[in-house]
Length: 240
Image (cartoon, rainbow, N blue to C red; front, top):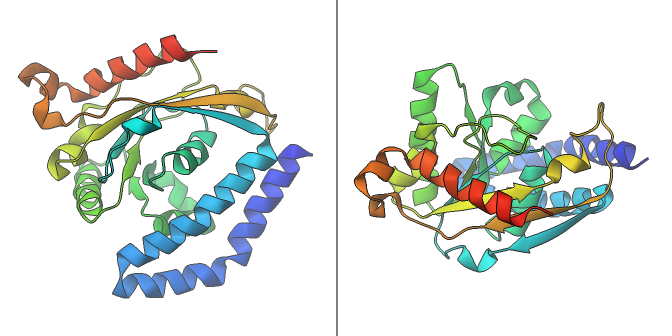
């Protein structure tokens, strides 16, 4: 029943809100920032409701580490629920970097665009360069962003290697990077076959921010590995 309610709400929301998306597109022609602000407000409350329906009990740690200015959140990636948890707990209502395949689902892709999400074709170098450029401009305009440098959901206790180019938008925008460690979101869904959502306790930890320009030369060259190491240490320390 829990899984059915979540799916029913998601599809109903996407269909009912089609006219709202059209209005947001028109608003965005005059003010992209206003489009994202309204879109994020609507999606924030939708995510809150879906987490409630799913029975997720969220423990948040380190929120005081998040700077007031726009940031790039860099997180491990265990579940679809990571997006909902990060969006609703960070206080920033950020946009996300997502794989381009999601654009095959137009209703979902429309709303992702309404909250300043970017799409990346991992097999196209030009797409990666454009994503960095667009992400840099969004951050400079005041929009925080999220990237999952593992590149895919990973439910194991060992993180996949972080893509080294994943922090480039933070370097070019000269904004703080906030490491994010997410624990046990996969237990809400992915640990079981099929679409079987069950309630559970998850944790999100916001680490201490840093600026890439302040890193030593060698760490600056391997900023992805640097932040991966930070998240892995937190993950081991904070597991239930």
